[in-house]
Image (cartoon, rainbow, N blue to C red):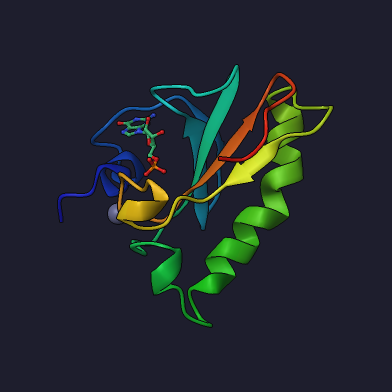
Length: 111
Ligand code: 5GP
Ligand code: ZN
């Protein structure tokens, strides 16, 4: 499968990791949209939020259970934003579900 995030998980594409366990990986975005921009992904290939099931949503719950710890570890002590882009109209470009963790300044309003 030609998925850039699966390649990051298997190590064939190097990345700047900030957190990893058996269910998820978090790393710095290659093209940051904020002073701090982390991408959090599950270690299974789920195409998007639109493809989630009762079973696979456990990976999403796990990611959210680690958000606070990851945010603190990258200095986001004063708040942050978690974003999921879903599908072409949602601005998704990598079709392996992921959550952007953004912060490091006071962020503007949503689009
Ligand atoms: P999307 O646009 O799908 O919501 O987000 C995909 C994100 O993945 C983008 O912010 C993009 O910069 C990031 N990205 C794409 N390829 C790579 C990569 O090879 N390494 C890293 N660290 N980030 C990537
Ligand atoms: Zn994938």
